[in-house]
Image (cartoon, rainbow, N blue to C red; front, top):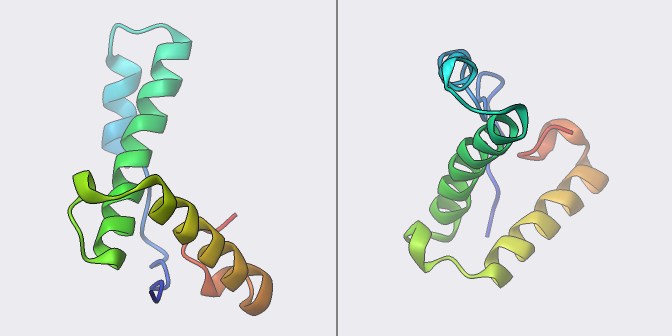
Length: 86
């Protein structure tokens, strides 16, 4: 599995999505969880694409392996080579 480099414009939550969450009638913890869930969906789509499977067919082991591989890329090649920029 080869992880593609994240484009600089890739965001896990767009400004429009963030504004919609802010406008929702939710508590602060609910807004945080909503943002996290939207971001997680976007990331799961990328992981599924990398494995060439449907999101619903992803296993927890594939998700773990994807994060391990991305972390290894970040450690060995630097943050810009990894998908997640943190």
